[in-house]
Amino acid sequence: MVAALPLTLTGATLRRQGKTLIGPVDLTLGRIGVTVVIGPNGSGKTSLLRMMHGLQRTADGHVGWSVADAIARERQAYVFQRPIALRRSVLANLMFPLRLRGASRAQAEARARAIADRFDLTAMLAQPAPSLSGGEMQRLALARALITEPEILFADEPCAALDGRATRQIEALLAGTAAAGTRLVMATHDMGQARRLASDVIFLLHGRIHETGPAKTFFAAPATPEAEAFLNGDIVE
Image (cartoon, rainbow, N blue to C red; front, side, top):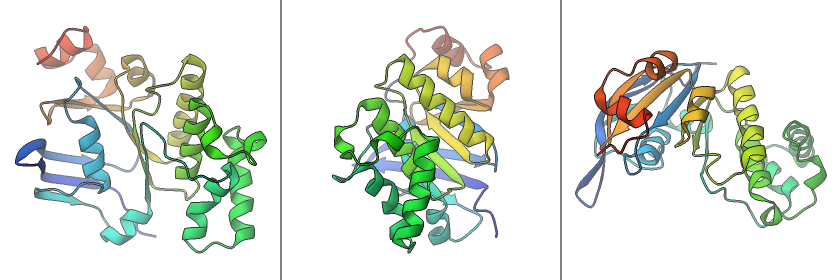
């Protein structure tokens, strides 16, 4: 099977109502690693993820995969900051992506129960998904995204509204997912989380990539005054 990655952005630009939100961006994402997107509020973190995933179309430039777009769509998944659940049971939510892809009910249920065990959701399988707590809902969203075994997962601020215990659980699941070979691209405002998870960093400012590089290098010695100020907790405009 030909890999969908690398993902290449060439002059990719996103506009809304005549305003440039992102770009132009030139970027290549390889097959392994955890890319963490950081930057001040309003810098375009969510928009960049949505553009890469295909939820928003570029106005100029190109977002290209190593396979046809239709195939690439089937090999990626996206987890929103505020998870969206079907008004069905947790089990039905987990089965849904597999049923959409043609899996039998028995196959889908077997895989759903297996991933529920991995994500500590087994005791909740019969519950209505909307009744879950924030941390439980985010675990469900991750499990549902990963049940199709995507090549790349986009996660937008996956721990933004969670307490410390739930954040620790989600981070462990994300780290395990990356270690198992799924490419991870995530946005976060939490610099501690970025340091714990990132293999490389994209620092966005005013919708453009201001600085990017290996996480250890970036956090130890940012190359630009703006990145250094941001890491120091200063206001960057």
